[in-house]
Length: 111
Ligand code: AMP
Ligand code: ZN
Image 1 (cartoon, rainbow, N blue to C red):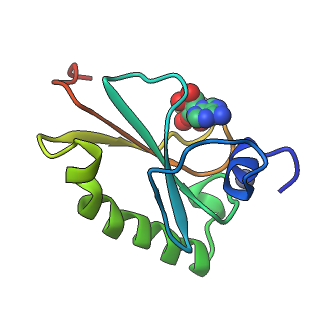
Image 2 (cartoon, rainbow, N blue to C red):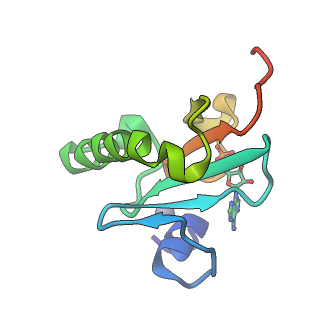
């Protein structure tokens, strides 16, 4: 997808160290961390919203949610973390390429 910052990161056009990568997803650090540890799990396929997800997209999201628990220790999230997927304007989504925020490394405020 042209002009999508996360597609550019996935393609390697914008450098961003990958903490994990497989054929379906990457994990990077958020450039503006909102917690001591803040990661983004980014599917390699472009779609912005759950409402736009097709069967292939659903398989990829399922894969992400299967891999994330396996990465907890390596990412320093073994004491717990918060998973956030912002959707659209009211959800505060700023990058229209679906991604999963992982926040942890400290006790997070209630929300
Ligand atoms: P959202 O607001 O849910 O769409 O989340 C987008 C996130 O992407 C924000 O937390 C940004 O800080 C983060 N972000 C934007 N550009 C980059 C980048 N080049 N590398 C890493 N994280 C980024
Ligand atoms: Zn994209």
